[in-house]
Length: 586
Ligand code: NAD
Image 1 (cartoon, rainbow, N blue to C red):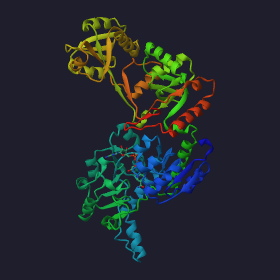
Image 2 (image 1 turned 180 degrees about the vertical axis):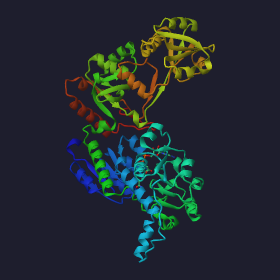
Image 3 (image 1 turned 90 degrees about the horizontal axis):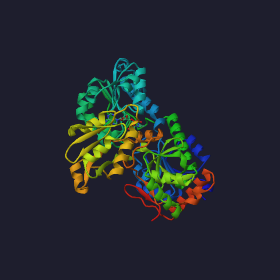
Image 4 (image 1 turned 135 degrees about the vertical axis):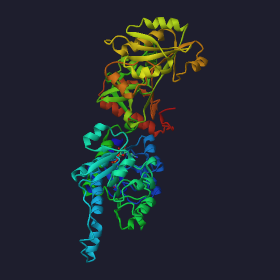
């Protein structure tokens, strides 16, 4: 079994010796540099992990060939050279270490600023040529000057700290920079044109996303002071190099410090050769400390993933967990639970694992599969297989269903709802009722009737939990009429599909965090309001129940699950779809 085999790690670019030594304590390491895509594709099937820096292109072909791959580590920050979505679709983790190089890049930013401000390269060059040009090489001071930082992430913040140390005023351009954050950091938020107009030094610290290509172009350079410096230690494509060259040649900019270029290496590009440019060969992160920290960090992350005992199951985020640690976020229908209990007992398998979020350590909230979980609990099965998803990774989305209620008449339904304890219904102008639902803290939902009226449903008693009233309301009309779930909020369009519809109940848009907090409080939403879309669903696991039922420790059951999944993966009973749904058996 795989646990006996020592994992193999392929390192395709120079990695600091400290990281290599740490890796070798736990895994077999092969260093193979300068591989072509074909060569990498040919050897990757042998390896459990791949560690790269910025040069190796990890394409979808390489990823698909990596049948054993569990993790791709990037010793550094940018992931532009890795097809991250292809890796995700294959259940391969991608790790980087963004925190390890920020200080080095910020320090290099200041090396460039000081080199420009004090003519260091020119001073050095002329001295080596035997000249003493003391008078010509008069510089400018940083104290009291203004620095404009574009991008206030990890590196931008470090730059701000160093700038404050030099006594500079700090302007920052960054979307969603809250006033509190600016205050905390002692910096002034500023829009881009104003920053460019005021700054004596403009420095870039934003990622190269499509919308940031050419962020500093002709128009932006024209706003800068002729005495200002532009510093780029982020990515070459952020600056229009031709426009920069023109600005320097035309005396509209005092100088530029460049660590990065649109094409790397740039060769004898006129910018590199320009007397008012200080150029360095993308060495912002190249310090002994940063490279050692990056290598150690990536080694630790790779080892941690490779050591996880649940290899195959872990790849698909499957885990065995105690049923009593799994809580629903929505009500379950007792009839459905009964039906499922009978089916589970008869088939003896768990077909589809519930999808959960680990809300706190060992505490799971079910996003999808509350009925299955409840059936397990009632059957007395101590453990259940769940698929654990991370809502923070952006793949999980939540929609709110609305309810089309069909029955004899709105009047009858209205009378029924007026009896729900704690509920107040009030007729409101239909045009802005959605605003009231959004803004009024005691609003629960609203009802739209087929004759164009609108009724806001509110809690009328502060001491009652709004969720209890919402649950009672939905339970009342569900018992009364036929309820269909819909995303449509136009009641007239619904008429075509549901001729007997008398009202549409519209609920607030809940966030995933709302839902988790509700479940953690021991409360739940009415059934059929939330609709989670989860990429990479594992379906048809068909895990035999006898193991989950057995009186065995959790670890043993986890190993069993791993074997079940490995076997299915080996038999290639896995299918990936574009919105990846993982099917384990057909
Ligand atoms: P980060 O993600 O922590 O911060 C980037 C910040 O920029 C974010 O806060 C983001 O909201 C903001 N941003 C994005 N687009 C923006 C725009 N158009 N205007 C204003 N703000 C914008 O990233 P980081 O770790 O600080 O790295 C920043 C850059 O430095 C990256 O491009 C990275 O590739 C580069 N980098 C260079 C080297 C080097 O060797 N020279 C080393 C590491 C990182």
